[in-house]
Length: 24
Image (cartoon, rainbow, N blue to C red; front, side, top):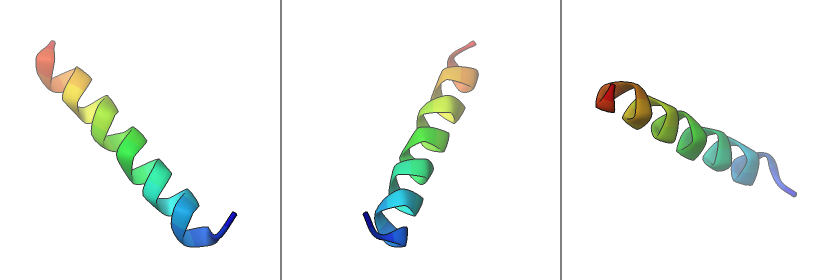
């Protein structure tokens, strides 16, 4: 597991959270 992969996963997770908050 490289640092880049982790960062990308975290970015996607944050994006998902932001989308959920925007929906509410």
